[in-house]
Image (cartoon, rainbow, N blue to C red):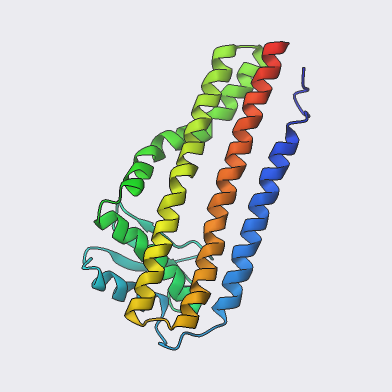
Amino acid sequence: MYGYYFDPTYFLLVIGMLLSLAASARVKSTFAIYSRVRSASGLTGAEAARRILHMAGITDVTVVPISGSLTDHYDPRNKRLALSQDVYERTSVAAIGVAAHECGHAIQDATNYVPLNLRSAIVPVANIGSTLSWPLFLAGLIFSIRPLLTLGIILFTFAVLFQLVTLPVEFNASSRALKMLGSSGMLGTDEVKGAKKVLTAAALTYVAALAASILQLLRLIILAGGRDRD
């Protein structure tokens, strides 16, 4: 039986953490590079976002500033597009790229993009799964209660499913953003390439998160299997 405080499956956890750290470091370094490249249009992230929303015929979304770095997001419930301090008032290629990406989510929402709706529907269950899966699993492991082990694995599977559905949502938002930036002339050809590098690096953080979640799920299954053998 594996010990409660150390077992070989910790290596799966370490691999997942390393992947996430590497992806996070890459997006930060890439964003920093293109944050120093001023766009020829001179548009700020907020101005670019409002222009893209207008081009898409979206009039009910508010663009607002938010504190923090790389905290940009679109809130479909409140129709609010929040841009971080490094994006809202900055005129860099990175700022415009990130702002356009968030607009991509707003356009997905306006056009009822199926993966986005599916992700929104999964959120409550995924949150419950992330919160309760490990406590239930550990209780089942410690007290040898098989139903709790199974329930913990099932709940965590929903968290993994959320990460999986997130990938097409993020890649599609970036694809929409890059097309609009290029066709509208807000960024030149070379600038679009820079924005693409920023958005690709950001997308890799979601790929790493999915990989880490899958490794974590595999760890739960292995631990549960070890308990059965005991």
